[in-house]
Image 1: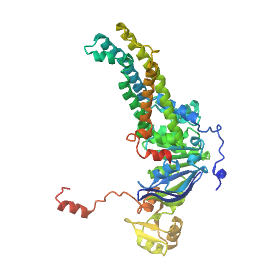
Image 2 (image 1 turned 90 degrees about the vertical axis):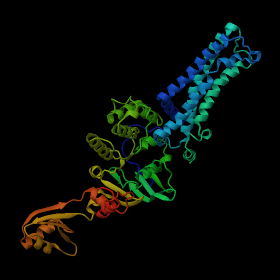
Image 3 (image 1 turned 180 degrees about the horizontal axis):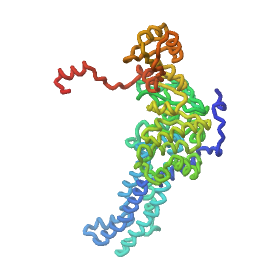
Image 4 (image 1 turned 60 degrees about the horizontal axis):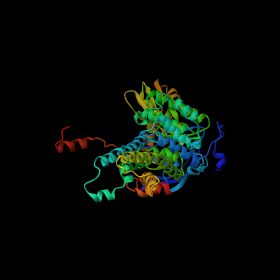
Length: 205
Length: 317
């Protein structure tokens, strides 16, 4: 039986559109923005980053100068203002994991793969959307945290400037770091415990 | 159009699907029947490319599922297990699926209205009842206005109103020239919906036939006769092709003869008939007959022996 005879002669309402990487990206964007867990995880990360950029420098300023001189020489104003990234990475990592495992746990992945049988476009789209959203939120959060922290440290003349050597790199690096942490949790190869082992089989079949 | 050729799926050493060959044609509702564990869902997953066959192939609308550049426009599927993220609203779930194939928001709203979910479309799908979940699944199957629909247990959890709705929906979709392939364990439901049947048991094809032939072919088709003289009539009717069993009182159960033949025979013999009725086998009986050797999971039958065993073991009845 040839392929043409198998298709019924039913009239079409509109010309069918192909699945493209751009359409899958749009679909993944809809998915990520329509889940509360995404919004909460990202909000938590921002609260950690900005909150600790107030708290840690304030404590530093209140106890300055330190009794131990070594502490004073090792003092790094940039690091002080960005303490929040250590908590934020937990929130971002959880988000990265949820994006994939949530889809498997609920069975949504079957609908996803039925719509996009090639599968790999789904993986690229998820990673791209996640990285873009995370980076777009983390860069301003980290810059804001740096600015807040430095304004507090100014009262003891401890502040750093973005133009100081290595500072801009450290600030942008912090945002990149958070994004990569999330991606590692998101991408199966780096988190075999969270991605079911059979998944590579599914993707690479 | 769905064409399966030698479709086989092994899970370890167990054959979930064993050399299935069948064709599901457009224009009619085709029922997919089989006892629990017969391999219905596995077969449906293989049609959709969600499971890879161990051997054989299955084509939908002339191609392997994964070869379609716009699968949602070709095949709409409702899978038995829910395939919805519980945290997402029904509308956003459908929208995300629609966007992969460039389907418009207007069409999403259209299918939401079609399945009657307009009031809850913005609510999280996790809070949906089983019936609402089924409606959402059917909405996603219809998104791309596909030629072929594959529905695994679509009436599960639907109320009588919903069952009637889906029955009419499936019939009208088939009447439009679509291929409609529906699995169900509800025989009575299938009897009212499907015109063609594919029956499997333990992964093997048992029957691929029209609904009418399937029921007519069952060995249990019999005619109930009540008469004033059962003994004489039984003697008249008995023959090489006909068997007569005395049922209760003045009633006889005749197999192998039509009502016409019995009526004529009784007339010739001058016997008065009180009742002459064809006992149409239900789909359920025909199905039980056909699959009695192919049931994977039997419930234990309580016999006198097992009861006495329980008693000797000191168990109260």
